[in-house]
Image 1: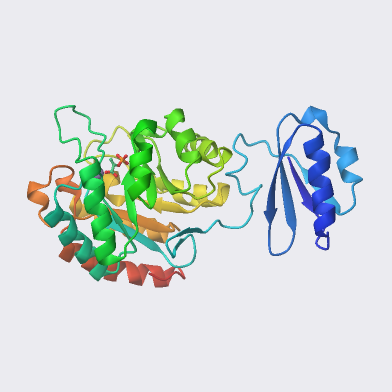
Image 2: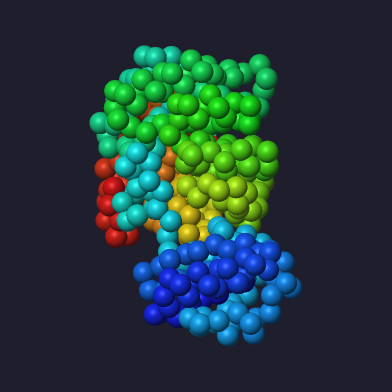
Length: 337
Ligand code: PEP
Ligand code: MN
């Protein structure tokens, strides 16, 4: 449930309500909006009675929250969360574009792509060093060597680094280099990993599982938030359907649904959603038109010889063209790029 304070409620009144709730063994979560304060209550509500809370000074009303996710829900936190990553603000009217190769393959490749995407106006650099591959015989990523190359690219371009972490054991090394910890689709319900990144000081990009519902995605976000990390961004990257022409099916509905249900920023990954570079432009534009806060796009200087996901990777020139098209869509939906 949430306790909605009166517009003119003072800090001491808010604190008194919080201690009343906490003294009954429940947890509180404060959301201080421009107009009023909302206190989210988490735990066994049979310990308190509505009437006693309503009698406390400054309380306007209380509202039950029946959704299973609390910290992630807009009920608890009506205003959009803005995640700040080294000065890049995700979740404002300014769109965020993350671009780079699927995998870090070598220094030349990464630095070439990093400079090109920076030039085209990308805000962050992506690149996997620990890769979740369907086959154990496929390229598994360069590991720490790849992370060092990413850090060098950050030095060169100033772009913050987004890179995947696949297990809690890898977290210390990934955390050392990354600005954003990516949780891949295959790990969306790896609860040990979610708890571990929930304790990390680094921001998290949580991708929707291949066969996960929107509610399951939000419950996974809840794990991260409940462990203390409030810098969470969500990513719709396509789900598995009966359609096989595309690698996945971009669930465009997920964008407005998530914007309705949660205050967390919502990104779209048009590359994994389609699996084909020729479809990335349309999927990107659709994502922005539907209200996404940003995009994560795979770009490779030589996609034909890429070690992973070449078929869906844009060449730098196409990425640059796409950025120009996106600027027009952004204007149409009152955003900037
Ligand atoms: C990736 O971003 O390269 C990736 C593996 O994505 P996903 O986890 O969405 O498949
Ligand atoms: Mn990929």
